[in-house]
Image (cartoon, rainbow, N blue to C red; front, side):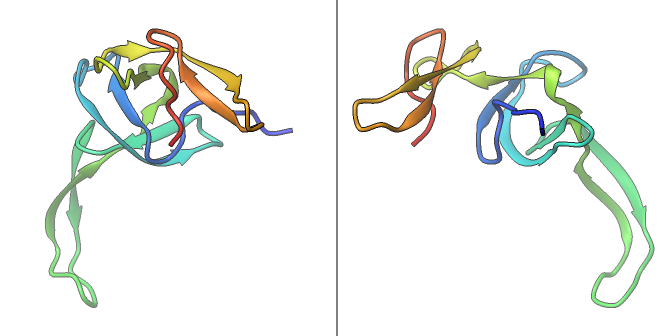
Length: 107
């Protein structure tokens, strides 16, 4: 059975470790096999791109994956890093909840 991650595409996260510590961004992609996430504007790298059909080539800057243990959810209330819990609402939906403030993360 596949491991369940609490971080999903589109979540707002805070980087906890590394050269981008403290930066905030949105998760663009989750790479489940490698336990990594790609966060917008975080862990930027430069790649030399050869010109091809439809692209001019040159030096391209893009986001590299970062390990999932180095990011935490951003608390919807104050923007600080928080852990995540689960809660079942009255209407039967199971939602993710910020442990720090009790706010619902899922929309």
